[in-house]
Amino acid sequence: MPTNSYKINPKATKSIHYTLYYGTFIHTPDLTTLEINFNTLVGVNEQGTIDFIHKDYDASLYNNKSPIQFFIDQREHPHSQPHQENHGQQRYQHFEFVDYSHDLTKFFIPGFIDTHIHASQYPNIGIGLGTPLLDWLKKYTFPLENHFCQSGQEQEQETKLQFANEIYNQVIQRTLENGTTCASYFTTIDPETTNLFAELLLINGQRGFVGKVCMDHNEPYQEYQESIEDCEKSMHKIINHIEKLNPNTNTNTNKNLVTPIITPRFAPVCSDKILKFLGELSHEKNLPIQTHISENKQEIELVDKLFPDCENYASVYNKFNLLTNKTILAHAIHLTPKECQLIKLKNCSISHCPTSNTFLSSGEAPIYKYLYHDNINVSLGTDVSGGFDYSILQIIKHAILVSHHLNMHKSNTNTNTNTNTNTNTNTNTNTNTNTNTNTNTNTNTNTKNDVDERLSIKDGIYMATMGGAKAVGLQDIIGSFEIGKQFDVQLIDLSTRQINSHYHSHNHSHNHNHNHNHNYNYNYTIPTISDNSSRIDIFNWQYPVNKDLDKMKDLLGKWIFNGDDRNCIKVWCNGRLVINKEKYNHRDDRWVITNSNGHNSDHFSLQTQTQPQTQPRLPTQLQPHK
Image (cartoon, rainbow, N blue to C red):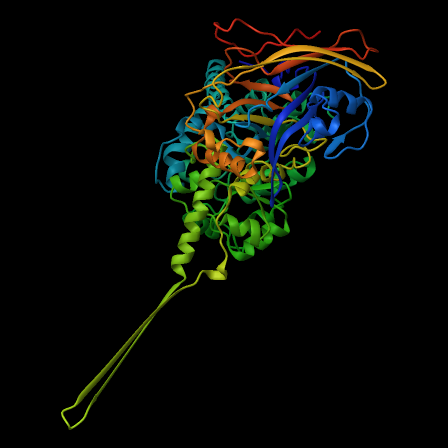
């Protein structure tokens, strides 16, 4: 268990070499765009920053150069090329090459960003189905969080830290294994275990926002609250601790891996005094803010009662300067039009938590409306443990499905049925009876505004990546593949059967003269692995041969609706590999390229390690770096 000595070894700041990645890269740089880039080269420097991108590399356009040759030439003699970006001339003695271009069932996608998760509630996942929010808090949540807050004897303090260590380590590992590279966390009111959580984020290699819950007016469960004085002391203690934890090499504080975040739990458990203090502290320290809003109708009624001078729920936070462009508002199910206008005006973000909203029967948030009509930024949150899953991939799926239900409700609500029956009977004295009956039934179904408000896969991926990056104020740092951004990425593997039934072996030798000489001699094997542990089946005709975009989009659909943590085989945070679940029985698609004749030579050798095929393969161990 870590201590408060600041002598911890952050996984996501360890020394790395320059690495060139080659394969399919998928991202949503903006709300309207889903980009699928095949055969793309992405260079990541020693700081974990992307500084080279070349999309859709075609060797035939460059004298049939290998991707490695092309990259070296571009870096040493940069000039304008189609789809290519770099940041000037640079030479390398040593860099690594990671190639997944041979298998289109594998692709790189930005790491997920979970903008609302309660780390301390992790043990309660799946407990309390259908319990209304306020009852759920009193029965399940407050008692659990109170376990983190033992005080007094040294032995009690140690027990508290051990209790927190076990839970916090587990939730960080679980979320990382599911592709979450950044998360905005709620802890508890306790400062010691909150500081421990910040240390564990660094040790495990996850980018995170650490929010000590602030609440001084918890009438339903008075054992779990704090005084305004204790809150002030705790907040300064945590902020100072995290400042010392972060490596002091970053002049840009946005690149810090761990950041404190101001966290009033929600208005019903906060006094005017504590809300005022937190608003002032956020302004003084330029810190982000997270809280809950309009999750439950009973909660909204309570806010109206407790804050009669405020027009609505959102105006309570606005009164105390807690609505800023760095504010994350979780749930936001039952917002009024005026609240939407205020949230947009203040440039706040919403964290959509569909699994929690359903599990506690809180409601269905109109996310399409928020995104496209109100122009509010929306991200995704697991909301553990109101939410029953810690995977943002599952949240994408549920967000899409909830929007489909809302669209169906809207269609049914606006169905107008008009039935007109006209009967006319004429009878004359000539015993001639003429009866004319005319029945006219007209049913019209009109959808309000005639707009399809179903979210798409593109929308889901956007909210999980760039929408999340905007919500936490890191849109210039993470969320997409762009020059200058950090390499927070997951590698997805959809393959469950062998597309080809054998291994392909390749032998390459290059001697390329272009005012300088490059010698490459390397052998490598491309493995095709059958992994029956995955839930996804891809049949031969579904494979995106010839870079078929439509089929690749179909595979994205398979991943969103059938995938799980088994498909997330590698995770990088800050350019560092922090999760590696890859199972190879032969060779790894990772090579080490070294300058074989010294700093001023243009001779490079490409090497790969191999182990006997009969032995189980451990996570790749690269050649020792000195």
